[in-house]
Length: 97
Image (cartoon, rainbow, N blue to C red):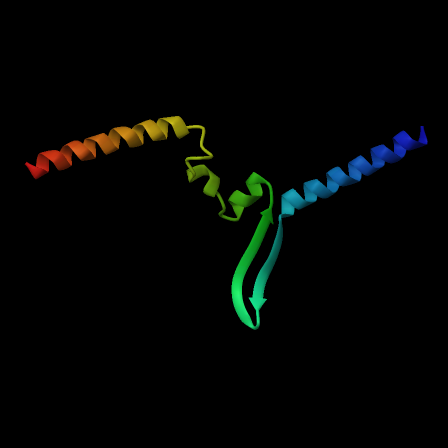
């Protein structure tokens, strides 16, 4: 019985921590620099933001809404793109005559 109670308390505290992180947001930043004989060969800048969707929108971050690869309308967008390309090709052929 004591194990169940301890496990329940741990789950609640983990859920509380996750809720706070998503509500407030957390930023993790770091840079990785690879050098050889004082010559910088590679720099990688890492930036990670963890937040809820609502919190991200409040901060002005909503890039996933405009990304066609993340959109449920991807098929529609691709077919529209193909149709527009065909129209442009037809107009270019007509203009070339």
